[in-house]
Image (cartoon, rainbow, N blue to C red; front, side, top):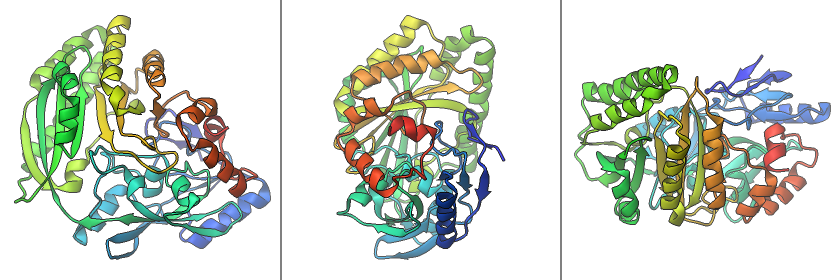
Length: 425
């Protein structure tokens, strides 16, 4: 079998593939890998752009570990292979919801947590910050439960699969709620002069800047008492399927064939941006459909450096005369206490750069990465970057503590792969 990720830029050929249906199956696989001197990884759904999930040994597929194990008292324990889109529906059936989440729902719970998947929030952090307990199989085949107050808990929430194989995750949940989603057009110039007020005034701020223009689509989500006023089925299809996927995909394809047209295409897209407002179930507002294949690099910088990061990125694109179709996305999160969270210990802002998959532009990512590195940026673990352990040690205060814990739990490196050899040393 050859495993290929969603973007098509990572492939691997494991020696063996297993689909465990129980914790006992995972334990057996880990013991078999250790006895045979093989490496082992559990892959998610392939939504990472890095080689974080690849292995040349035993690959575990998560499909058999799906569903809710237990629920009660504001806590839900879910099996690690459960796709986020399934979890959202299962929670909604129980009148429950996560406080915050990212916009991609195809990921598994374990894959999303282990790579530090986040959404945007003034007060609420990423998925790892909503975890209250982890169950994982360690390299010696034992099953551990990690709870707050333990080093393993703070290390393994964003653990890159380097400390063990997650088999179940307990989330803090709350009663289902509505969000008022407002979309409006603003100029990048106005946003840069009002970042603090935009961030403080909204529970969830997300904006997209269209390169070669001064136009941004600003999305704000705030809790609402109701009643629900969801977009009509036609409006939802028009915005989320036709315009944001079908038409955008066609524009990317035209720009790929004739790059000189991209500034004009983006100008037309900017002119088409309009205001809208709706009130709907939280997970339906948080999440989005993404059909157009792309490559992505995303960095977290201290929030006070966001305006500088955006100005320098804009100036770099203009100076180098690159033709960039995809918008640059910006989000924010509060500090996290998970050791390898990109938001560890600081209010953070995320700058995400995308490129249409058929027309990669490595120089674009390299140029933006240089800007982010000067601003103490931390690369998203599941998105493209070139940083190694020497750099990451400088921007993660608990990096050496993580490595020391890994040395103790997995001295023979059952759970390593080429990617982890680079980022963890």
